[in-house]
Amino acid sequence: MGSINAATISIIDSAASGSSATTTPTSGPVQSSVASAVAFSPSDSEAAITAKNGPKITLGNTNIYIGYQQVSALNQDPILVSFTNGVRNWVRTDYETTADDGTGTGLAWDGSNLYAVFTSTGNQPGNNLSRFTGSGWLTGYTDGSPSGGGGGKVGILAKVDPTTGNIQSATYLTARNDKGTATLGDDTTNSLFVRGLSFTGGNVLVQADSAYAPRRPDKTAMTQSVGNGALPASTGYNYEVVLSANLGSALSTRAKDFI
Image 1 (cartoon, rainbow, N blue to C red):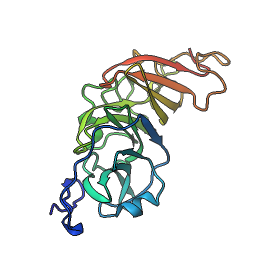
Image 2 (cartoon, rainbow, N blue to C red; image 1 turned 90 degrees about the vertical axis):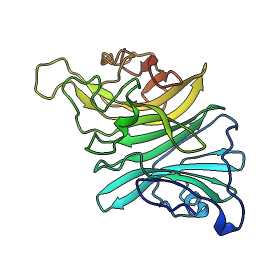
Image 3 (cartoon, rainbow, N blue to C red; image 1 turned 90 degrees about the horizontal axis):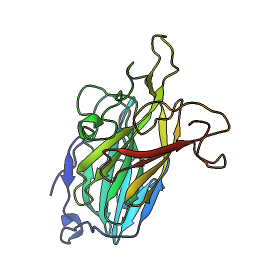
């Protein structure tokens, strides 16, 4: 039986239940689950994780859950786990193992592909999520922010293999605090929180709350125009970005009060 170790992938057989190992199905209805991050450990049972009411998706008899592991009093790392009929298929705790506080807050399935939402407060030395984002729309925490990082919490969207948990591609999702001044610290990365995921025309639609200022597809900051913007005022979030299925480019953006 594979062991469950932090910062590793564990492929678990079902010897403890007396049955053969399971295989994660790769089909299921389109679905999305984005919510507040919940804490669980690699050794938790499916019943214990389900009771947390965190983000999950269901593919046939398989459930996939995302959250965070409390690895120390001051540090959290993302965790992703798959179960079939209550038997653990795999668990991943190795995506980000640095001093950064990372969590998992969402999952979505477009009928063929699995996407996961993570959070980050900046790159720390070691195994950080930027090692997966080299071909993404935003390749790192400070990409598109000439003055560097601002310390705000941002999102990372990753395309994940549902049979192993391997990240296939990913992009950062950030705002750009560009006030157009020469002030030291202007034009830094600002916060962005993913509120929802959906799909349109084979692409991924990210619904988010963006701090000043939301980005255009070319990574520049949108211009504030109160009462304007292409996103309706009644929308429960303030920013949308449509990403290609491989997360390598932004195809369109729109926001409240920004153009």
